[in-house]
Each structure stands twice: as structure tokens, then as C-alpha cells.
Amino acid sequence: MRAIAALAFLALLGGFAAQRAARFLSRRHIGPTTVLQRVRRAGALCTLVSTPLLVLALAVSL
Image 1: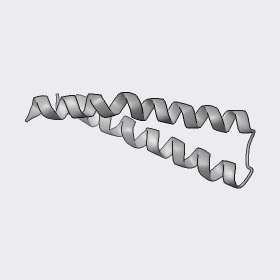
Image 2 (image 1 turned 120 degrees about the horizontal axis):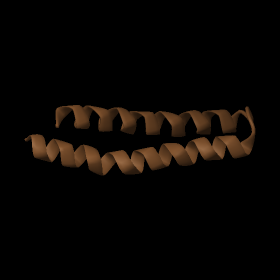
Image 3 (image 1 turned 180 degrees about the vertical axis):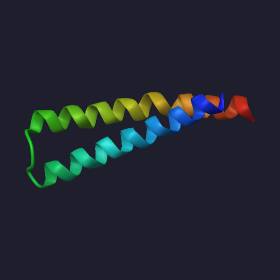
Image 4 (image 1 turned 90 degrees about the vertical axis):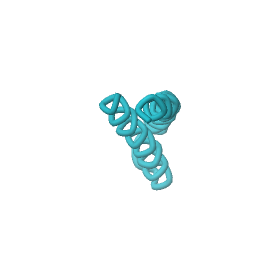
């Protein structure tokens, strides 16, 4: 269960990082807008899916 929690935590951090990177690049007008929107959406989806999984894994391991 700790391995699942660790993977969910990494996915959560990756989701946040993808969203932040897309925002950073879009503010500086670097890259096509559609690609940056897709990266931001993928990061949001990753965060949305990994958060309940992380909470569940931590609740079970305690």
C-alpha cells in the first residue's frame, strides 16, 4: 500500500508541475496554445485522479 501511496504522491506532484509549467510557458507566449492547454488539462486530470487515490492509500496504511 505504501508503494501505491508513493506513486499517487508522485502523480500528484507531476500533475501540479505540468500545470505550473503550462502556465509559465503560456504567460511568456512560448509554444502553441493548444498544446499548452492540453498539458494543463492533463496535469489537472492527473491531480484529480491521484488525490483520492493518495488519501485512500494513506487511510488504509494507517
